[in-house]
Image (cartoon, rainbow, N blue to C red; front, side, top):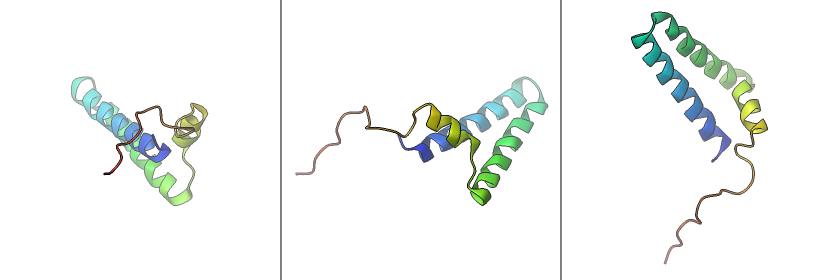
Length: 74
């Protein structure tokens, strides 16, 4: 998986968790979604993304894909 895709999945998951927790627990959980949105804007403007650093250290986006080889065209 590409690093960019992993970051998008992480951000989307965090927003969905934020909305779910705000609905079932406390509206204060919406601040998590606000934080994620601000971080996305900040990373687009500056090029610095903390999630990218963490995911790289975890090995996301490095090496060959462990998935099956793509189908060949005939």
